[in-house]
Image 1 (tube, rainbow, N blue to C red):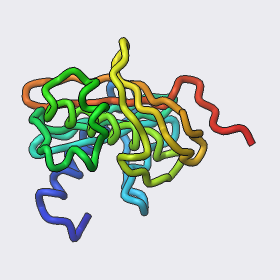
Image 2: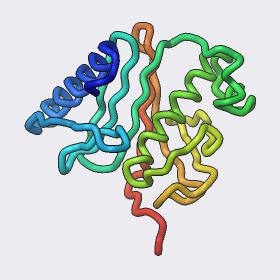
Image 3: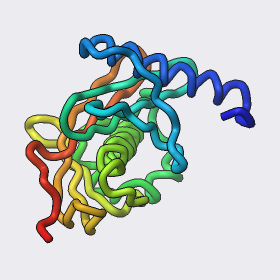
Image 4: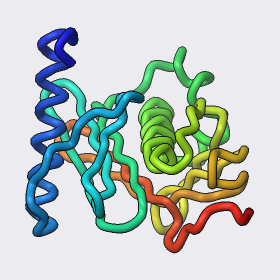
Length: 182
């Protein structure tokens, strides 16, 4: 981070401060969350989490078991030129929101699911590696191919909301997930 631009350094520091505050709320001693060689957070033993930030706001979500992913973005429509890179038309249509905001939500769900799977798989996935759908309980992101211990068809579940002018999405590894059998 020493060579990053000042705005990026501030976002990094704010994300780590949010993580320490979340640890405190879980009645854990606040500890450092260094960046690993792959730039992912290295969580203390017994803590699983995710950090996200945009201009002016950083958030962290933590849990004691399982992995989760978090995405924060402006609650603004995504530019139509980006939609084909992120989602299939049917994914956007199925969300039931204005198409630009639906595309932003699909982007956030895929980003959050990516962050949830990464600690165990270390797999770099593109937007075409999963499909998102709205369910009665929130969101579901289904993997279309194997990623580390996650077999094709693994479903990550989560939810979303809009607070002020921000869209936030959280996705979790399936409860009781044990990975592919060897």
